[in-house]
Image (cartoon, rainbow, N blue to C red; front, side, top):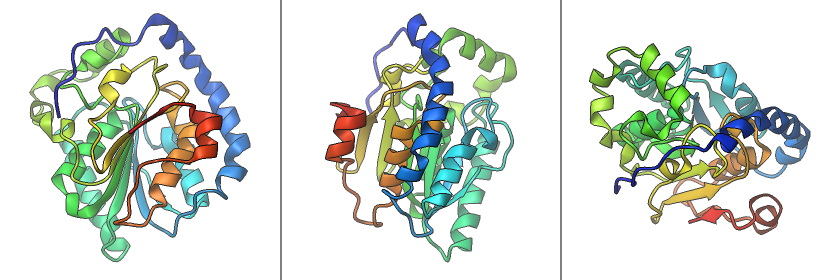
Length: 260
């Protein structure tokens, strides 16, 4: 895809509003009984990849919701996501193969939050025959460096990843910048206080879309609008993918927020 022009990153006001994540988690818990009856799975396997400096605990609420909705979700089982590492990607690829085998050769959907979405896209480009679809949540995949991340997070990344710029995965950024050859949905928020949303959207195509939601970056895995959109995308029949479009929910949650 085309390289995005440089952006200054999230503004201070958006960063401050990341405190909304606590409110979003409370609201999501209230909405879950309703959401579970809207989009239903039939046991499709889904691997959820966590954000930078988080682990499977950070995606637990989303995975519990997906399981209750009829999907079979998995954490990435690699502990804390400490940055862009080829070893993490290799382990994820091996996990995709294992999960596929456990489900009789079924293709596996990937949901990635923030940096987790970078891994999801890289994995889908590496093993498209094993991936059903990719959904990213506030993932700055459309940039080759950390300039899409707010200053404090970028410095933390550099501190925790000495020598990270020489990692083979980082030097092959096209593996995640390029749109996967499978259905792909990029969910993003213009109020994201961590990742510049301009870097979190893809070029729309026949199986590539962007869905804008209200909310914070830290709350993307427990935001009711996001949770519904993820489940609705996952519930589609394989080979029958269509762009996200639900009129009544769009008016209630998304407004004019669909960018197809």
